[in-house]
Image (cartoon, protein in one colour):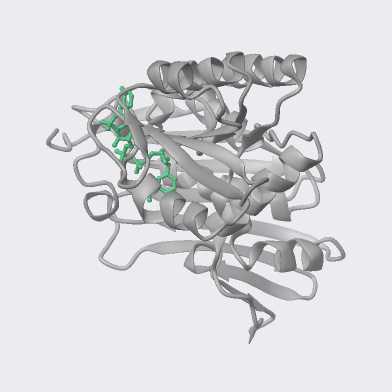
Length: 309
Ligand code: NAP
């Protein structure tokens, strides 16, 4: 443990407890030293109510992992980079595209690692799918990312506020996989957003992209779906259908299930953060966020029934 990285975790909510704390505890390269959250504490470490106090009192921290809501990520990341820390960002990395560029420049200038995570890219189906698709003739892509918002986001008002992304909060996970597995860039051509009368962000969206070779890539995101969630990506190729399901836990190619490793998205994220720090590297791919921004720029909006906020 002597040469482990002293880590601070900021924003102790659902994802911090469900995934980050167990992944950090299981990784000997990180020593969770302190946490900051306005309303929560973690047993066994020093706790502060905000990141400024944490950074002031814990100068020996090497790295900070940010797991609060996207609307506050930029200010927290800026404070951590200004204090000389390596920084890992939950997805989406920031609430807009300008913020992440400022953070990237700050990190480079300070010679610190900035890691904008996309946890779904670490799902077991993703790399085998990418490797197989690299040699195929792709004909079309269809994404269905549908779930019950009341089950998956209970009480999370921030998702309905500006910067909260609405249905793009899970939808951006699908886009993070699509931008990893397809061999060419995709461009948004058309989008439709359905926005509840009492919300600022969509509850459903349909996106129509083409790739650089003109191949259609369609995506349907819907939070009015249930009870069984649908997190699927179909890629029709000259050699048959590649299907990712279970959000990346399962893969089939031409009707045959592909044997995959067990799901370990967050342990894999912390291994990558350690690797990036050790190699003086960054990992900041803004493309999933850019596609969401394009959907907000191009999308036709339709008001739908109030959600009941
Ligand atoms: P959450 O539980 O609603 O929020 C996380 C924590 O952020 C809250 O507990 C709160 O802690 C802090 N926070 C909220 N507003 C804040 C503010 N104005 N200033 C400072 N801190 C604030 O949300 P979550 O589900 O963990 O999601 C957090 C991030 O993880 C999101 O970007 C989400 O996309 C991502 N994520 C979530 C999941 C999931 O399954 N939930 C999965 C993957 C990624 P305090 O009140 O104690 O400060």
